[in-house]
Length: 148
Image 1: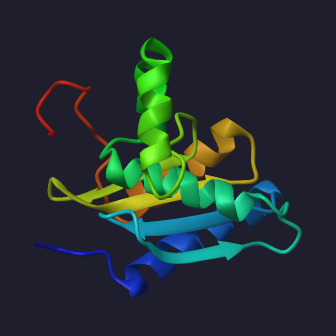
Image 2: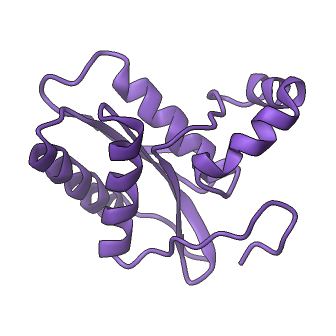
């Protein structure tokens, strides 16, 4: 079983923060392991105060749900009561939004990446671009399918 190291997390953080500079956005970025435990979080100079907490929630959700957070929309909307209870049981909120992507390599879930501070589309793109650039997988089976 592989694990996401601090060195790998820092490489991801650096890539996202560089994307933020390119966009002219002050971002916060968080990386968690497969169990949702925080490995590292960074907040750019000028990033809004709540963005680190939002980034952590996005990373946590992507890791423990084993799907990017934008894949949780339909579930959250179709069964909001259950989704709210699930979130209440977790150690961080479970969010269904853009900007949280599961970190996966060779079919194995390694953790989650969360970005906050840009638009939802910018947060999502920063996650996907950096993970793709670093050789992580971005294909996830729909709910109810094999984990693929």
